[in-house]
Amino acid sequence: MAAETGTPTTLTLKSNDDELFSVAESAAILSVTIRNMVEDGCAGGVIPLDNVDGKTLASVITYMNGISAIPADEEKKKSYRDKFLSDKDFETLADMVLAANYLNMSCLMDAVSAKIAQVMEKKSVGWVRRKFGIENDYTPEEEAAVKEEHKWTFEGVETDDDN
Amino acid sequence: CGTICVGREDDRISRLPDEILVEILSFLSLKESARTSILSSRWTNLWKHTTRLYLDMDGGSSLRKTKHFEFRTVLIRRDTSSEYVRWVDRVLESHKGLVLKEFVIRSCLGLQHEEPITRWLEYALARQVHSLELNLEPWYDNSMYGLPRELLVAGDSRFKSIRALTFKDVSVSEKDIDFFLRNCPLLEELIVFNSPALSNLEICGPSLALKHLEIVFCRRLKSLRVSAPNLARFWVATYNGLLVGNLPMLVEILAQCKDDDYQSGCIPRTDNEVEDAIVSSPHHHLKVVEFSGGFGRTSLLRFVDYILENCVVLEKVIVDPCYGASNLIMLDNMLDFQENVRKKAKQHFEARVPQHVELVIL
Image (cartoon, rainbow over all chains, first blue to last red; front, side):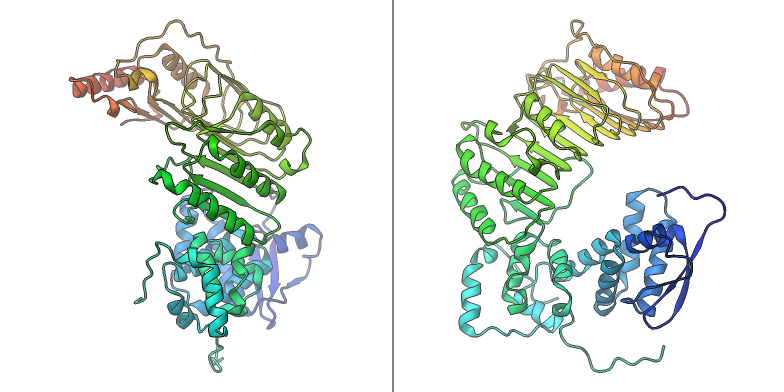
């Protein structure tokens, strides 16, 4: 990260539902989207983030502050991320992954994606459909054809239907 | 804040954009990720756009990179090799991604599978692969796969995106490595595990991007010269003929020795013939040094002295003097031998390691 000179700069971020947030520049530039705006000199006033609502942005900022306070120690950062995401429900995770993608924050994006993937891990197709409310829109013939094409994905796999 | 959840929006996950779902799927094994195609028509082709292909013999693990290259034994019957080849071909036929961040081949393959392996490498290179791992484990009666000359064409722009290369049980030569150093300007990580084709290796260059280097179990390696301005982690399994210079960014070094002397059940000899010429240059960042095995060798002792003299910010020295000795089942006095080696190590290091540096003897 670039060395800062003088007093730490604070940025003002605006969510798409017009909430304003102050955040230290050093933490906010974890977002490549924000960093680019800062580098292009567009960060003087308020930075509008049109794709993120206030509730999600507040959460992302908590993450930015938390993770940037940890020195370069990947283990500690990882355990912070795990803890940060541990109590989030799927709706929140979905909002978070969209925000991380829009803000171009690869560390948060990876952590949330991994967390969502974890839910699907070792589960049957039926379980995943029920859990996420995915409607099976295949005709029986279509489904049979897709299953045939992907027969190898069932070899030696034990799925866990009950959790 | 007063907003009530107005009717549960169904199937939120399927409404996420493709790029995000593809990213999520990349955290599953290939098998599991491909299985999502059965969920609904929204999911039919998503997995085919993954940028990470872990083609593991057991169906594609989702193992992410560990700190050091992890030696994993592939427990597979030999008759499944052809099944694996067919499986990889089928996966690559379905795959639709235009770029690949990671491409991993892990199986029991050797020279007899040269044609498919080379074809797969071409596939990955055509998709500007970032991280390439060729992790083979040929059967004892099958020779190792080597990179064919035709594949390595100087100036080929397909190599420009490569950031990480791992070769295990692949016959990689000095020439091949030199090719990669010249043609992969972004190469940050290079791991070579058990290549019999290396004897005198030079990894030198003022503009090398290399940050992580592991040269392990290359039995015919006689000399290794390393000079790379950005190198931070360095794992090497030889002390003989090791020549290091200009490694200003080095923070971690692991020197490991499990040599033939150990394997043949002899107590390591003190080798006076090997002449090391270690270039002296202070390391301002090196904090952790780990020595394993190879005890009693002059080359190791000189290397230890070199490290202690030149590492000004050293915080920790880890010594595993009996590394590799567990194979010494032929030795009746195994425990005595280990105890003796440990005692020698303790004496040697305690006399040399300064007080403020933490010394751990395993």
